[in-house]
Image (tube, rainbow, N blue to C red):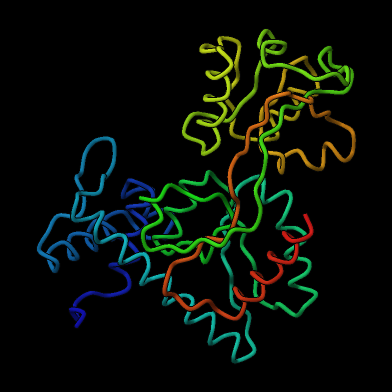
Length: 303
């Protein structure tokens, strides 16, 4: 039995403080005063009998107990939201479907999938949250996302989750048209190592594959590099310079089709790994989620 003293406001305040690492930022997001949020957290800690946050000048950090509680509280809060959305759909209202996607998927898969789902009668509002794979998986576990279209995470991270493979995506090396290396002849890594290399930041899921590739070719250090997360910066920079952009194919598929970027024919290929649907194991999807998942599968089959 849930302690009757625990109210939704307690859970909402707890999750917001945990997400924003601070009482002030959480209060602003919830449109409450900071004392009201602090009081709600203090009441919750008193009810549970454990400290949930360590308070400091830099903000609020979850304790071990807080981390454990967050996983369950987030999932329960999200389930309640999905239940409300389901009832709205049954009653003719419009629910919301929150989907986490990698930037590569946001550009390549989701526009067509959403169009297809809408054409098939999907009435729910759709919220697309793009970000790094690790962050997306964490949000899914906490209940902030209904599903994720992204890469397969490490086995230890996938506990409690289910993954459905859709396709495998290569990592490509792209440059502007007319680049000195874009001669049409095969290119080796040593041929481009003296150029500025743009690559995903450390911590991104494909970065280890890129690092291993250079090490295998005897290139252990890259001094002239730019680490970037946002495709907009990398796209603009590589078009205006002789830099080489190392990125997942899906991010630049449209650029390659339009001819605004050129793929270098590297003699060494590397795969960024499988891309697919990640959901919480054992959780029944809403009808809206099922409709969108069907559309994502159909679009992926056409790649």
